[in-house]
Length: 136
Image 1 (cartoon, rainbow, N blue to C red):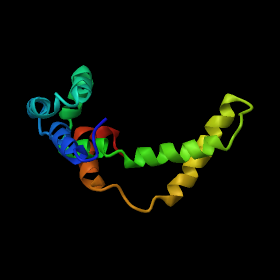
Image 2: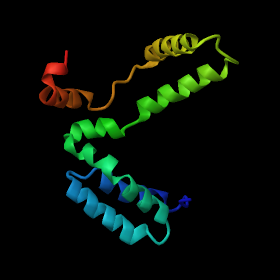
Image 3: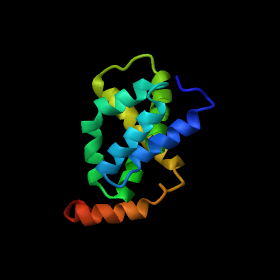
C-alpha cells in the first residue's frame, strides 16, 4: 500500500512510463522507477514487468490517441452508473432483459454528458489519418 505522503511522487514517476514517447523511453523510465521505488513497492514494478507485452502495443499509437486511451474517466463513469442500475434489480427474467436495461441506462447516461473529452478533436484527426477508411 502506497503511503499518502508518497502517493504523488510514485504516480509522477509512473507517468514517466506511460506518457513516454517511445517504448524505449518507457522501459528506461520504468528502470528509473524501479531504482527509486522497488525497495518499498516491489509489487508495482513486478506488475508492470509482468504485463509489459500488453503495454507495448500502446506505444504504436500517436500521443493524442494514447492520451485518450489512458484517460479512463468516461469509462469509470459508465461503470459506476451501470453498477447503480444493476444494484437496484434483484434478478432478471432472461439474458436479454439485462442487456436491454444496460442499453437504456446508457441512453440516460449520455444525456448527462455535457463536457467533451479533452483533446478529442486531435485524437479523432489521428484516427482519421491511421484508419481513414474506417472513420465515417
